[in-house]
Picture 1 (tube, one colour):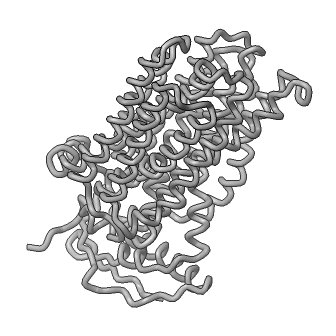
Picture 2 (cartoon, helix red, strand yellow):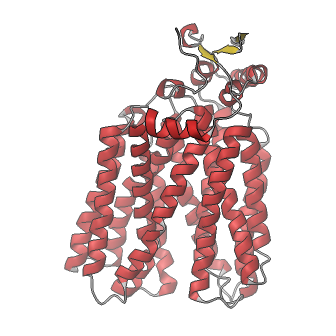
Picture 3 (cartoon, helix red, strand yellow):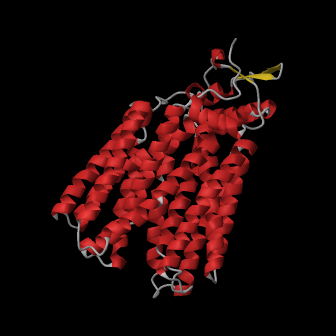
Amino acid sequence: MTTASTSATGGTVRSLIPARLDRLPWTKFHWSVVVGLGVAWILDGLEVQLVAANGYAHTLNLSSAQVGLVGTIYLVGEVVGSLYFGWLSDRLGRRRLFILTLAIYLVGSGVGGFAFSLWFLLLFRFVAGAGIGGEYAAINSAIDELIPSHYRGRVDIAINGTYWAGAALGAAASIPLFNHDLVPENWGWRIAFWIGPVIGLFIIYLRRHIPESPRWLVTHGREAEANKTIGEIEELVESQGGNLTPVDESKALELKPIEYVPFRVIARTLFRDYPKRTVTAAAMMITQSFLYNAIFFSYALVLQNFYGIPNDHTGYFFFPFAIGNLIGPLVLGPLFDTVGRRKMIFTTYVGAGVVLTISAILFQAGALNAVSQTIFWCVAFFLASAGASSAYLTVSETFPLELRAQAISYFFAVAQIVGAVAPFLFGALVGDGSSRGPLTIGYFVGAGIMIIGGVIALIFGTDAERKSLEDISAPISLVLPR
């Protein structure tokens, strides 16, 4: 095991911790990080899909507008949770927050299953959303700080893509649970709400064994704990058959630990120090959010109004749509580490836009049926899903460690707010299905937005593949050589 290489001098600390983490071989330890932390996206996909099925509407006597409000409150909770818990994660550490946010989600979703009125359901949907929103900020930070640079891109992208595994699980669960011949109406949706917490109870046990980020510890003045943690990780990796190579002493960083970063420093970092990265991150997050919300929340209306698919059959078309979204990051993710970030972001964003443009032309011409329309969606989002997942990776790895979680929360919040316009807009464009023209224009707009996002990333993006986080963006606490 490599010995600790940290010494304090005049309020500074010399650390090899980033280099020690990045040279680790892949072992069971890293799989435990992936499984323990990656479940957040599965839970989010599960939640959105089960709530979209609105099995609770009849029991609680809700109108269509009130059902929509339930979904909106969940998204508002995600934004609030992301902002607040992202701030706490940068200040208190990753581990405390990824335990806390999961616990909050468990309470929100679990208690929500006992809802007896609209106000009770809204309250706990907000709580569940806040927990999941906090997960996005704390967990993306922890994953990128624990996973070796050689694998960081593919792992982060694959994990973000598992949202669609949760969505598919939710769709599958809704079939028997909302079949009133099998499960009483008043119980089906309640059981659905409890699926996530049951999964979460198992995951919270796994998370108890995931350490705090040594990178976060050392930049916050806890170098002894940081060295103890990295030493334990190295011992575990070796016990699992990993071979530790010598650490390059030239990669040592001289740091002056800080407790927290004032907002003025965050603003200066985003808009003065890294304006191109800020533009790139905002463009990627907003464009993917708009397209996803536009298609995901309107696909059932399109199938019903233009192709005559009954409402209770649209779920069958969702499965291939979800599978395409799930497979994309798994297949294309490794290329982000080999071909490169900017090239792959451009390819996935522009590719999705081109496929959607072709489908829009064929849709307007009446050349598609429900099956072929779904195939085009599958191909477009096979590409778009990998690109959308890389948006979170881009935000996480291109800004300094001390404000990483907050940066994620800011861009996530902006993307959610802008993306929230898309379902309403595309719902209006679908109308009663009497005219294809308005929706065709909407598809062109969505495709164009994605293409613009890809071009911006190609021009202003960062070549971050297989680089240490500290090489991509120097910590704010870094002491520069004189």
